Image 1 (cartoon, one colour):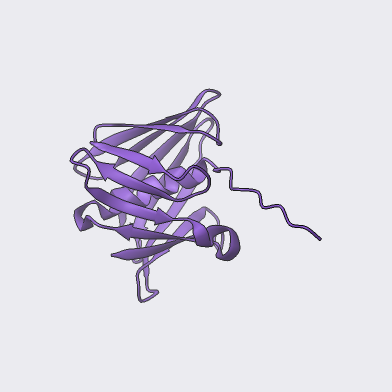
Image 2 (cartoon, rainbow, N blue to C red):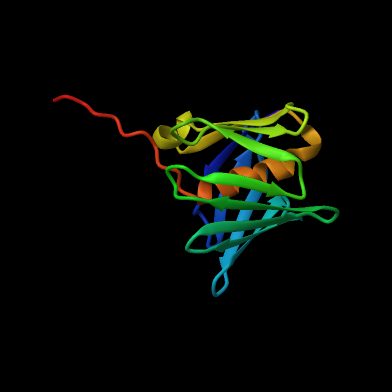
Length: 162
């Protein structure tokens, strides 16, 4: 299933809106900052909370806790925005990133692709295309895409002659 994730600041606390292939709203991501952390909630279009993301940025790493009613996993990201190293804990995923930019693949331990995030349209049109291959992990894929965006990846700088 393809999803389209767009940054959304239309309401106070809204971070992202996620649409399906027919451009119907599927999920809303809202958040609020606490002293050192941020707590975000992924809800259905009807406002039913489905998943929680806790974000703890530190000098040396970013820590994310992702939880639904049945399961929890963690992502730790080390290094700077130009070369982040992702580690998943509690789920058998890894990220295969493009050398530059916001595109990546989520890959399971058996080397099957769980999701492909295409970030080509982000800079020009403001949205990501999430091609979710495992429907049972759709919410976790959305949460991982949100976490990756929060890291503010450095995009390729293009040189133009005038």
